[in-house]
Image (cartoon, rainbow, N blue to C red):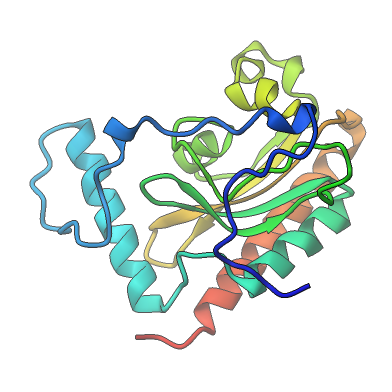
Length: 213
């Protein structure tokens, strides 16, 4: 099968697969690569705008693709395979969460087939971005703080492990994560956390060795 990096929207396959990942409200989508990093910071929204502009500037300078990438797909697949999870993501935080690397079950598996974008406010990766360290959730329902999440209902997720992608400059570019419909034993949490942390280091190493613009 030929690689199709632009085929990145949700593709309903079964009754279960018609439940799509939450999308960001259109009124929230207004930033892009042309946003200036010199915006004056006067509040949380301005801080977010400036942070996004700096992220775009760094990604462009490093030559990091902001579209689907075969290399990042392979890294996502390797991470998910090592963890034994159904889904793996290399996720850049832009106007939306953009999954430049994606691994998921086959279309005929009966699992939800996800696309390449999701709202910046949904899922558990925003928490990883804020805390700037790994988030291990062996069972998302074990904590009321993390169980009330749109992704739980949309995809039926029970376990999540994510880690941030932090550049040497301190800029957080995004995350890597794995998710699965099955919860994991608490005894497995450390091993799974280490897998996503190591995957994040691999992604950043790949970025560091990419041609610099």
